[in-house]
Length: 218
Image (cartoon, rainbow, N blue to C red):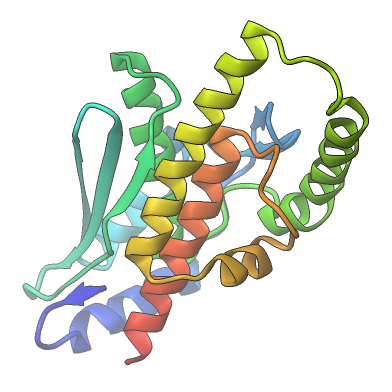
């Protein structure tokens, strides 16, 4: 996490903001986790008046390389002080304009909520620690049961896509400085096998936030 030399004024303003802000209503359904979340426009409509009231503003800057999108979130104070998050990089589920736009919106929503100290969805940890873990065990059992079956062309294609998906994820994890064991512990699972791209993106965001929190304490 980056910040201005002094954060005395912005820290006070953020404390006043957080004393007044409430969590947005979770009105949309996440089809991957079967949970509810607040869309980005609802979050912005909720926080902008309070941010302005306390002399605060937000700036989220997206960028990309054709496959991954990166969002950096900056909170500025009228005094000139500022706090900026670590860049959050996610892999778009599809290499299209719509896929990139969806990933940017996803990253903006999570990063903004984390920076402002609000919750914009149902508890993710419950999904990682229980539902996903059980799902992963079922996947492992199914794989063991069918491993003598001859793979089809469709299976081979799916396996190749999954390899690329996990290769990108573990590359980002390595850049953040986490070990495989630490990632499994944070996710609350023994293996990430069976995770969808959105689940990996959500876990990567969790790791980014933990890394930013560690950096802020040093």
